[in-house]
Amino acid sequence: MNPSYGIILWVVIGAIAGWVASMIMKTNGKQGVLMDIVVGVVGAVLGGFITRTLFHDSTANNGLFASFGVALLGSVILIGVLRAVTGGRGRPLAH
Image (cartoon, rainbow, N blue to C red):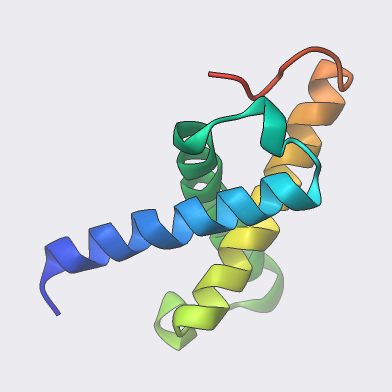
């Protein structure tokens, strides 16, 4: 696969994971598409770190759906941590 397709796929998976996580955590109205992408990509990195640490997972083992699940898990955790740090007030994820 062309490396540029991998980056594009990573951003697309991150955007969808960030969007779904924002709906799960009820922050969808407070953040736009750009923040969904940022939350999803950062969440994917966070989720990857967590799964590698706890389960000794390798990115080579993950298919498309597993990668999405890891990104979604990390995104939900990221939104939860940001909400806890800000006390859930205002627009913590607004751009």
